[in-house]
Each structure stands twice: as C-alpha cells, then as structure tokens.
Length: 230
Image 1 (cartoon, rainbow, N blue to C red):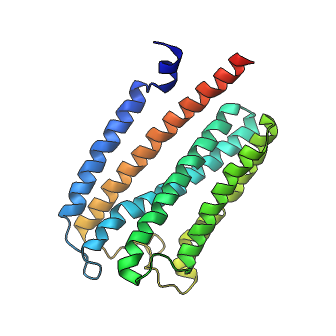
Image 2 (cartoon, one colour; image 1 turned 135 degrees about the vertical axis):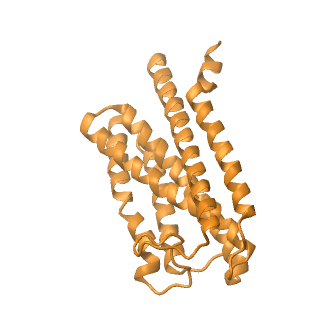
C-alpha cells in the first residue's frame, strides 16, 4: 500500500460505524415513511425526522468540540486540538443541514423560506459563530497560538446552544415548540412517530461518530506528514 492509499483508507472500525449508521438510517427512513401523517402538518412531518436529529447532533458536536478544547488547554496535546476542530467542522455541517431542512419545512408551512424569528435568528448566529471559528483557525499561522485561540472560541461557542434551544420558550415565535419538550418532559407525537424520530436520531449520531473518527485520523496523518516534511 503506497502513502496516498494509507492516507485515504478507512480502518475497520470506521467502516463498521459507517455501515451501521447507513443500516440504522435505512430503518429510520422506513419507519418515518410508515408512520402516520401529522394532524396539522400532514406528510411534511417527514422532514423533521432528519431535521430534528441534525439539530441535536450539531449541538452534540459543538459540546464535544468544547470538551476537547478544554482537554487541549489542560494537556497541551495537539491531538485534542485536532479532534476539537474535527468535531466543530462536523457540527457546522449538521447545522447547515438543519438550516436547509428547516427552510424546506418553512416554505410550505409559513409561505417563506426564511423569516427572522427567534429560533431562526439564533440558529443563524450559531452557524455564523462557527464559520468565524474556522476563519480564526485559518487566520493564525502559529500552531500553538492557533490552537489556544481556537480552544477559547470553542468553549465560548457553546453559550449559544442553550439560547438557541430555549428561544421558543423565552420569546414569542411562529416556530413550533420543541418536538421533544425536555423542559416539560412531553411530546405531542404519536408513538410510532417517536420511534421513527429516535431511530433517525441514533443513525445521525452514528454518522457523527464515524465522521469524527475519520476526520481525526485524517488530521493526525496530515500532522504526521507535516512533521516528516520538516
């Protein structure tokens, strides 16, 4: 196996995670299409089976980025910085998917793709923050200073997450209330809908874990190659 193949190949654990994620996602989509239509939204509810999972996993990814940032500041191990950046990048990807899914849901529901109501506004701010996070990483050349500045940004970024989630509770909004109301511990969904939602959430979480493992390995190989070139 040549160097390029070693750089691009996936290990068995990564392939297994991806395969499992695809299998669970297929089951989740089957359950989503089998579930009855919503009383108010009809079959438009199917968008939410991916939209909600993408939003929750984006939150998870940003929190994991924060945890790895704390570990980097504590241990001064570059591997933690790489994993923090990888998790933030995946979180940004899922946040963009969340915004896209929300826009596809909003057009037939509200008549517009976008409106500056509290949940959408705070989602846009959260997305813009992590775009800024990567602009910061690219703007700083010194590796150690870059890692410390990025760690501080990753820790600061999670402040936006509870604001984004609680926006539908704190401010008057045309956005529907939380699909899973963790504050009041209830949901208005039918049992089969809840099962479909949870299976899709599991699938998207597995995709996140697989992507994080792959991104971490790619970043580690790139760092090793840079050290070798020096």
